[in-house]
Image (tube, rainbow, N blue to C red; front, side, top):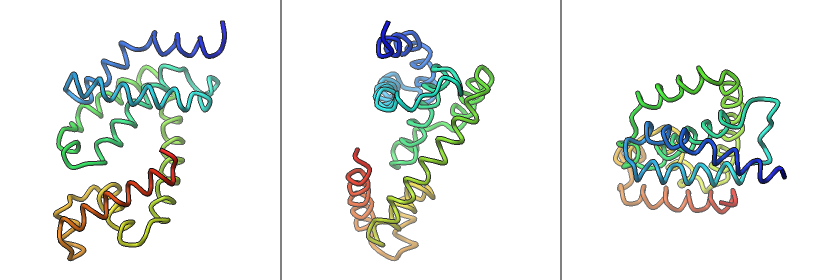
Length: 173
């Protein structure tokens, strides 16, 4: 059996537990399906970064689902309202209990992602970088950013949108 077939088999085998985790995080069947699809695409795209000596594939894929959900929660105000912090804590606790290696993997992965994201934000024009940082890193609402920066909320939204698009282009998304 080839390595690619093994990876596909592993993903297929864990599909139900990944779907259950996505559903626990989102509380919505359609949102869970979207989260699972995005997570599986990420897992497939970064399959070469998986190191079986540091943990099993199930834990790695659950970490991707949790991180994808956390990124979605931080990205927009409407998604932020739908995220249940307690569900995230319970899901993470359940996964950590069954997979102790996940904590170290998650911490290292988050540090690497955080460094890349901060570098991309720093590369943006100052006004866009500030708006993106306040929204996506600090978790402020558009209204709060507008109040703090003294610009209209529409301007804040435009800066964030343009900044995110530039970041996507920089990061090759």
